[in-house]
Image 1: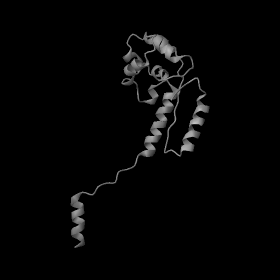
Image 2 (image 1 turned 180 degrees about the vertical axis):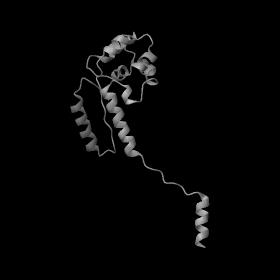
Image 3 (image 1 turned 90 degrees about the vertical axis):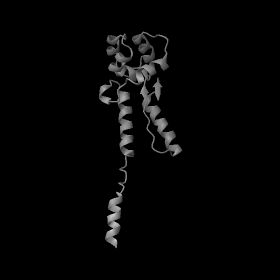
Length: 143
């Protein structure tokens, strides 16, 4: 969720209350603080790869997840003041890291951590199928 100007802790509590009232299965709530572009500015390598002419000095000066109008700042950094967010997502999406430690964005790292916890909790070991030879040999022993 893109929180923009919301108090993210209060918003998360409200969303958890709604989910609890719905008796929903396992739900993960994570909030992109300020705007999703904060994730983009958190990954300087992806930013440089997607927008080679980006103002990297200015990008490095950005304090991750700070509430400053991140979409507008991102547009200025990449030289696109038209707020073409879909184009930005298309350019950044394939290049962004999936490694939490490579992102400067605390909200991205929280999202990553939450997804990792969900995946870990949902992992079940598949039952091992018996090979037909072992089934056959166990049947022979019973005779």
